[in-house]
Image (cartoon, rainbow, N blue to C red; front, side, top):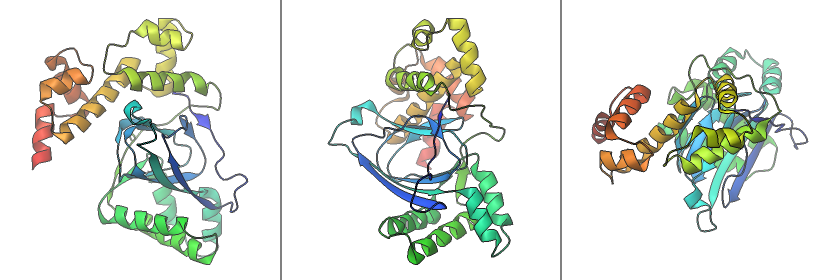
Length: 288
């Protein structure tokens, strides 16, 4: 999964931080990474997101924090790509090196440094912390750059470094070896999988998208993602099955086939291998 390296804050009004609001038919960025940290609140949208080696569904009212140089992307469901289902998000970008330099002149920054280290795995916030961060981000977007907006930034940072209302997204040992080259190929593969995971995906068809032989493609994909292509597809399917189980509208058997699995037993085995529990147990836990 070779993402694009992007320069978020170059040319911005303020070099240390920036806020951004997105409202369009669908999220259109490609798989990318940047030195700036990114806090994102999904105002309205749903689909699949990749943060590091985490592949999962996202939906409205989700708030994440992506640390420096952590690859990420949000893909919308193809069914939502029309003007009646606008995708809306709010984001805060912070340049960590400059932030530490500025704050280092005022106080010790070890708590911020600890948080930034944790954020390199990607964080998903919940509870009261999520609501407070969302509210402060909404306020920041309404202000010009100045004292009031910067004070809100400080309040956001204080919340981030003092809360424990979050979970990690990427695995503990995750690292990436991506460069700014060759991004189109992997982004094309991602989009193909997200649009076709409900049916069988022949390996030779995907390899052809990358203009590679099957053997070369498998080696290429594994070296970039630290997982096999089959494992990647299974994780996409399981993330969708979790979303459907949460909606509680379909039987487990129907969900298995709706997500591209060829049998219930195969679905149960792969789901348990990824989530550690069976689909039925997952549903039962949601009811508690």
